[in-house]
Length: 356
Image 1: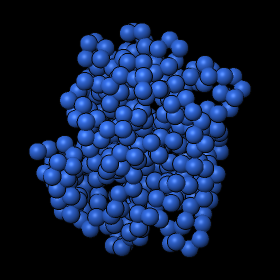
Image 2 (image 1 turned 60 degrees about the vertical axis):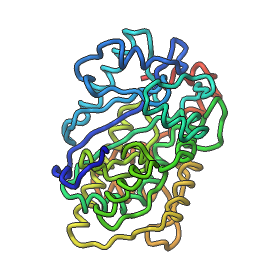
Image 3 (image 1 turned 90 degrees about the vertical axis):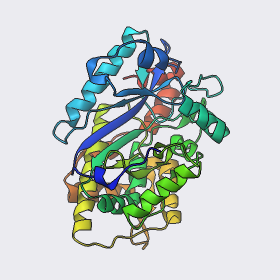
Image 4 (image 1 turned 180 degrees about the horizontal axis):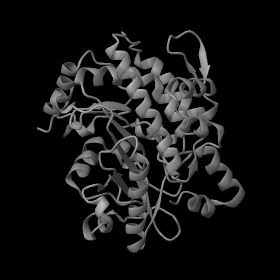
């Protein structure tokens, strides 16, 4: 049974970035390509053991090496460039978004990997339509109980990240009216969305063990919550943002996530008790993010009224000394960009705009 350990939480502030992308054909439309790219050909060295497929044969995942804030910019770009080169040499392109507007789930092929076949058998319809692609950021924390406390407290900020990253208005060729349809599609799966809070790492580890032993999940990696203490890597893993084509946007979320986790660890060490919000409040804020994107407002952390995304972003940039999320907010959102391109230039131009 693959379970993690408190002993894995040993390093503070390390970083790892996982990105999910779409393998596309010459038209820019998702197509089966992960067999060739993952199993049948040798990728560039930087992708050795850092390239994997997902449920659909059109979705591929990369992982950076374990890195630092100083080096993550270079690592993210090198991994992306290597993936594009590898795909191109095999006749494919690479695109990024939370959902690809050209992905028709009924027509796409599933991976043969036993893990995914078991998921399809167990979950059925919600997993069959799960053509999502996201951005996951790992930040190392050197104390397991601190990691659990941070995962509890960071939950309020996740809708902020989702609203800023919203980049999936289209699903199955249909304009959903949402800014992040990916978030809604994905949370139809079991063990997703906003997690409840946990009192300690011991309680979280017991939950992991119970879920595996009782057959609810095959391994701890199937706890797909928006944030989780990763008991294997010794990190807090934020899994909220939609996939992004622009590396600058990816790096903005990495910068913010790292600063936020470090800040919360310091608060934990200072003895703060935290808010321990109810999941219902957090779900409301998440709904506002996926529906309204940059126009969202949220119920405040102290539950006293609302606060706009603009105000949250300004405050966070000032108090944490970050700038990337401010640049994202000041610009056109991913969802707005997709709709504008599609309306002005058509579907082919939209697909082209998502290419790396």
